[in-house]
Image 1 (cartoon, helix red, strand yellow):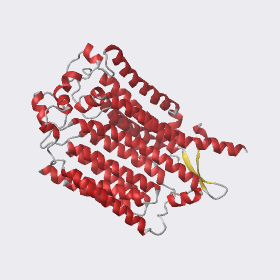
Image 2: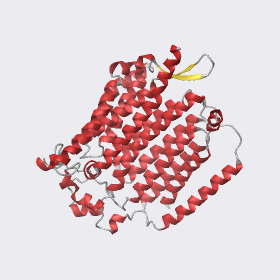
Image 3: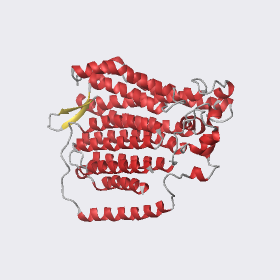
Image 4: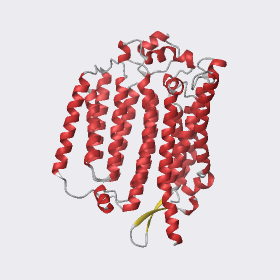
Length: 186
Length: 115
Length: 160
C-alpha cells in the first residue's frame, strides 16, 4: 500500500504543475511548469518498476524543454488578450463533463490497481515473453527483447514515423530560405 | 482512485487544448495529455510487490514470471515517448513557421489575417 | 550566438566526454541492463546539444555540419531494415534472430543476444542524428527586424 501513497502524491504534484502550466500568463514559466510535469512522470516510472522508461523520459524531457524554450524565447511573450466567450467556455465544460461521466463508467470495469490481468490469466503473451525471453533471444532485459525481437515490426514503424516527422520539420523550416532568396534577387 | 487522478490530468490537458488561444499553450496541452496516457498504460501493468522485468537468472523462470511487472505496456510506451518527441518537434516547427508568417502566436489573429 | 561564459565552456569541455560515453554504454549494454537504443540515442544527442549551446553554433557547424547527420540518419534506418530483411531470408520470419540461433553465445554476456545488439546500435545512431539535425535546424534560425518594422526569422548564410 506504500506505492499507492507515492503515486498519489506524484500525481497530485503533476496535476498542480499542469494547472500552473495552463493558467499562467507568461509563456516561459508555462514551459518550465511543463518540465515539472515531465520530471514527476519520470519519478513515477521509476517507482512503478520501469527503469527504461524513466531514463528515456528524463532525457526526452530535457530535449523537449530546450526545443520549447528556443521556440518561445525572445519572441512574442505578450499574454493572450481578448474577452472570454462565455458560451464557448460553457460548451467546453459541458463536453468535458460528458467525457468525465464516460470515463467513470469505463474505469468501473477495470479492476483494482496492483492486480493486472497477467496475474489472473496465465496464457497472455506477456507471460510467454517473461518465461522464455532469456532463452529465446539472449537478452536479459525483457523490454529490449520485446521491442527488438518479438515485436520489432512495431519498432520499424516507429523509426519510419520518427523519420517522417523529422523530414517534415526540416521541410517546413527550410522552404523559407528559398523564397527569401528569391525576393532578395528581385 | 489513482486511475481517476490520471484521468483528471488528461482532462487538464484537454481543457488547455480547447480553451487557450496561444498556439504554444495548445502544444503544451498536447504534451500533458500524452504524459497522462503514457502513465496510465504503465499503471495498468503494475503488480503489487513487483520487480523490474530484467531477468538476471537469480530466480527460476516461473517464479520470475509470477513476480515481474507486465513488460508489454512498457515496451509500447517506450516507443510512444520517442514518437511523441518527434511529433511535438513537428508541431513546434509549424508554430515557428506561423509566427514567421503572421508575427503572432494568437490563433484568433491568425484566423483574422487569413481572410 | 557566440557561446556562453568561460565557466560554462570549461565545464562543458570536461563533461561532454562523460555524457557521450554514458550514451554509448546505454546503447551497448541495452539488452543486459536498463537502457537501449532510444535512451542512449537521446543522451548522445544531448551531448551535442550541450556542445552547441555552450560554444555557439559555428563551432558545431564547422566541425560536424548537417551533411554527416543526414547520412547517418538515413543509413542507420537502412541498416535496421536490412537486419530485418536478412532475418526473412535466413530464418524464414521477418526480424528473426538468426545470429543468436546460429552462434549462441554465452548467456548474460555482451555478444549473447545476436542481432539485438546490431539493432540497438542502429536505433541509437538514428535517434541521435535525427534529434541533432532538428536542433541544428531550429538553432540556425535567427530573429531580425526587417525594413518594414516586422520581426522576421531568417536562416544564416553559412548554413547552406
